[in-house]
Image 1 (cartoon, rainbow, N blue to C red):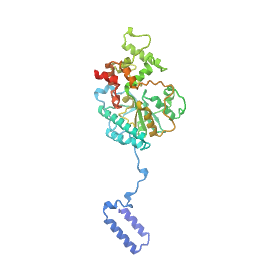
Image 2 (image 1 turned 180 degrees about the vertical axis):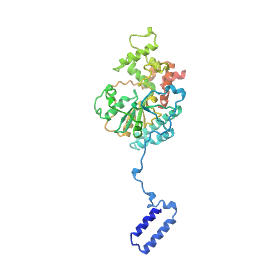
Image 3 (image 1 turned 30 degrees about the vertical axis):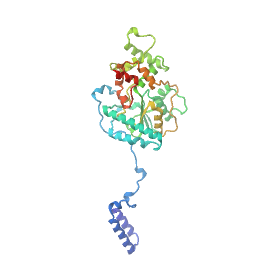
Image 4 (image 1 turned 120 degrees about the vertical axis):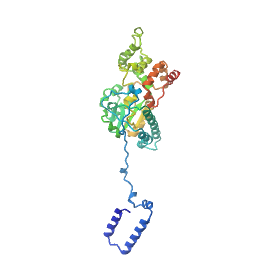
Length: 394
């Protein structure tokens, strides 16, 4: 019994007429209490230490960053480090803290611990984050956080880093619906989503907004993304209605770079192999088209080694990952859907990938992999079998 308890008892006795017999009984009880072992006294129900805490006293803080200094890339990778962006912040994180959060973090924010789908998805996320963190540590990868690469929704506390050619149009449509710019049943074209209505979306202004938000990004096999760009914008027989500008500008430039004058045809006929050669050849760095938002590296665009994403989505599991995000954010009034007028290339199918990469020379495949090596390892992707076979043969 502490001093405060004794004081309260004395006040109680002083305010009431207590008989001598009652006082004797109270003194005997006090003597017996003091004589009890400390471990027994601590577990008595009236001990103040055993008062149940108020539910509001139990809080969780979903921190994203700590104040550890950023690390530099290994010198041999310096040419892969993007230093050109403005309006940026740089953060790095403790790998041990992140790995610990991978074991428990997603389970804490799931809607229902007994929901089998959510449990499975939480485990998938733990595996993806572990692969990501191990790769970040292996190569000391760091990059600047570009505010204008992130969309924000304050109502549902979402922060999304969009990557072109990785379901970004789908997610822009989601954010436009959440903002009330687009109705749930409106038939909106892909062009309008990416041009006119994109201006209505809210961009990230302060990196610390991420600390209290559900942050996510999506990746895909880097080689399938390259193939998707070619088939959508540069392949001679593409069905994309605005491909002509791409072909006459970048496509013709690539043809001119690699073909002698007598090998250039009036009819546009850029091959996939030529496109791969152009964007994988480091001697083209700095030339128009070598860097482009549709094929820039993921680690430079979304800074996955410097932002602690709650969800790492993949195009190959798009709808399951989207369902998981919707459940985490408790989004129930809209549907995740494909925009109208989209022109999918299905370039992530293994048969399609292998067929196109069969005609790419081994040297170009090696150079292309070298450019996207970090993205392959960060997100746990394998080379297409035809590309891998050529590299192994070499």
